[in-house]
Amino acid sequence: MKIFLAFTIYISGILQFCYTQNQKVWIRFSDKNGVEFSPTKYFDAKALDRRHKLGLPLFDFSDLPIREDYYKKIELLADSITGTTRWFNAVACYISSEKLDEVKELNFVKEVVLMNASQRISSLPEIGLEIGEQELLTAQTSSLEGYLFDSLYTGKGIRICIIDAGFPNVESSKLFEHIRNNNRIKATWDFKKNRADVYRYNSHGTSVLSCIAGVYEGQKIGLATDAEFLLARTERTTYE
Image (tube, rainbow, N blue to C red; front, side):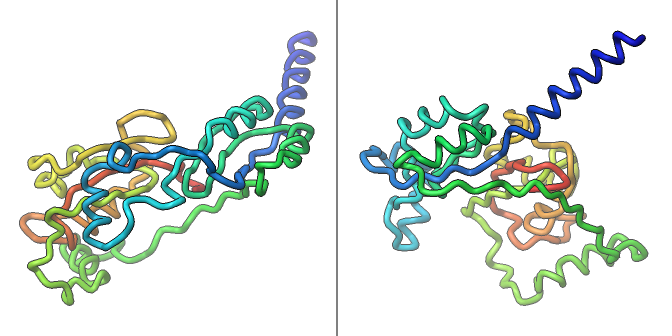
């Protein structure tokens, strides 16, 4: 028993040491010089069409991927890289304080930002807890000022990406039957689990989708019921 207890304390000490020595940070790069990029190969046709309609260039600096050589140099120093972002020209990683000092001296590193690890849990709104289902759905549409919305605009031909913490029951609920039957959920991805299944975990994404596309017994409770959808789970329940 004493040996087991001593071993447990030893392992706990190691884990605590590793935890305190490694920090999670954003490492932002200074440039994307020399990066080659083909928007017609990278973007979906829908994205190119949208940019054309809005008179936007086919791509800009934020669309370019990060430099591979910069990534590889950080990879050698970091404990682990957990993500990249071309928009912010940065990588997210766990790294020791010692190695972080080395990173800050690299001439291509623009900035190091310590990630905020605080967690905040939102409280549930009280609306709808004591009223009927139909009244709740009407209240939802009214809160979106649906009465100002022209019924001719249904989202047809538009592709909408919802980024949230989960979409349970979207694959089975009658609220979204019209979307499923017409194959208008074009792609799904769980970025936390690295898989296509997003139909679990927190229901906030399901609620958001209902505000956009929900139809309840023939009544529209969403304002873009004919749109196409991309569903992405990118966060856990308690923090983003």
